[in-house]
Image (cartoon, rainbow over all chains, first blue to last red):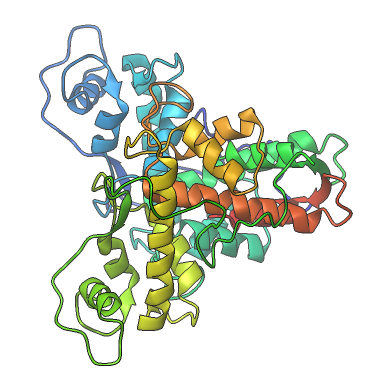
Length: 221
Length: 221
């Protein structure tokens, strides 16, 4: 089969991708991305103190709910650039499970674990410790997640998500920052699953009308 | 036919969409987006002075070429937010025609006209003068450009490009800023044209393998 091994052990958006050893062996390294710490008051009783500290730190107006705006202010890449709006929207779509428009403590617990797991994944695949992911590191990551993509597709993904600002595929590559790496991986997963659903007879081909084609593309992050 | 009237008079990325009256009738209004002016020296002889002034203003290091970084610093929305990296990359892909990685004076002339024309389009369709485009204004614009999209597709486009940061389709819509509006229109155009090319017999259906499906999606802005 020429595309991703369906269900090959790669699990986002509900958790971090398994399938790599994780944990020890590659040191602390730089912070690939995540939450910018802020001061917070002490935790209430009965709650994981570290997690509550993070929640309170991100909930800068102390409302007990994290707004999308508070989330975006808290989320930074390892190079201190903010997360793209499209990545913040993707995270809200995944974790605002009660569709309240904001993130409560329990939703935050899921979001926090997700970002932390992705940080470990990112650090693991950033083998040259450059702080960004290049096309070879991207290929290694997607292969590990079960996607055996052609060199052409890998090149297109790298062009789309690299922070290089020149014309697509021209000028030196700058690499893929943390938030764009997560978005790229989620997009590949979601598009592959959409294709899989449409390919009911598993022959590697789908038949689509315009409405189906456009809605499949527009729902990807 | 259920999708866009192929070639129905809508012309980006090589120019602004025709098909609306343009010009007078809707006042100056706010600046929907475009270049943030900077100080510049006088123009050399034989060159459109206004355009040269803009070029020199954006070319902040005076190298005679506009880098992607200089372009991004110069491009702002009407609410003073910067253009998304993905919009800057899209503009570089369209206008860095010699693939030098930067924008020369002649390339800038095309880019400048393009942004200016889109500003007029944006101002025209922002009928309530809110400074952003809502879903009804988006529908009017795309219909004018020849795309008769279903309410569901319009809703998906609005969710994807609206700057609302909550979960997709939840929380109050904030509207679509200038740079995201341009990107949305270019994406609809490019995806519709891709579908058209694949639909060789014009029956409204395409057959795609995974490679074709993914590459079509990944080349859209």
